[in-house]
Structures are given as structure tokens and as C-alpha cells.
Amino acid sequence: MALLFVEHIGIAVAHLEEAVTRYTKLLGVPPYAEEEVPSEGVKTVFFRCGSHKIELLGALHQNSPIAKFLAKRGEGVHHIAYRSSDIRADMVRLKNEGFQLLSEEPRPGAENMWVCFVHPRDCQGVLTELCQPREE
Ligand code: ZN
Image (cartoon, rainbow, N blue to C red; front, top):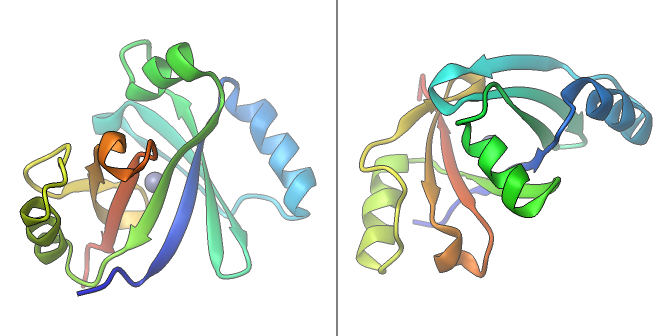
């Protein structure tokens, strides 16, 4: 089963408000949603760009994976998210192909999605997210 499409690109930012102002100017449109995901230690802000989305990610606290990413690599592209039609089936498929998944089960993510991350080591250095709307 193929992944459906690129759902969004996640960008780690040091100062969320500043980044929102900048991306509003860049894209010519304000964000349509913002949400805290305490389980992941992030605050997310979403923009639409055509059929794609840009997700700005700010750290909620020092132990957030985003804070760790920023400390290690600085601001920049954090992950690419692909829409899955069956996240559990894709997790099994990828596991069987030798990919390292960062969680055993799908986790609740922003925008009412189930998400699972694939280790960047297995994706040419790109942290990769699978996501599927939770109501599906
Ligand atoms: Zn994401």
C-alpha cells in the first residue's frame, strides 16, 4: 500500500511568534490553526499553501524533542509528513522493510491525526511522519 501524498512539512523554529509573522508574509496568508500537543512537547501553527500545509513547530519546554532538535541542528526543516490510508498497516509494512519506527503504536498528533515517526537514519536523514485522520 502506497503512502497517499505529502501532507505537510514541519519546520522547527526558535521563536514561534516571530516565525508566524515571517511565514504569514512569505505565504501571503495567516495561519489557519494553532495547537499545543503536550504529549510531544510542541506548539504547532499550521499554514495552507495550495493543497499542502506548512507546520511550524515551537518547543513547549526544554525537554521537548523540538528543543533538542534546535540545540543540535538549529532552525530548519524538521520532518516531512505523508498521509497514510491505514497507519497501522503502513507501520507493519515499514517495520517488515527494516525501518525503525519511533513508537510501537500510533500516537495522537496535531489536527486530530494519528501519527508515527520513522527514524531519520532510515530515510536519508529526514525525520519522516506518517499520519492519518483519527476519525477514519
Ligand atoms: Zn508533522
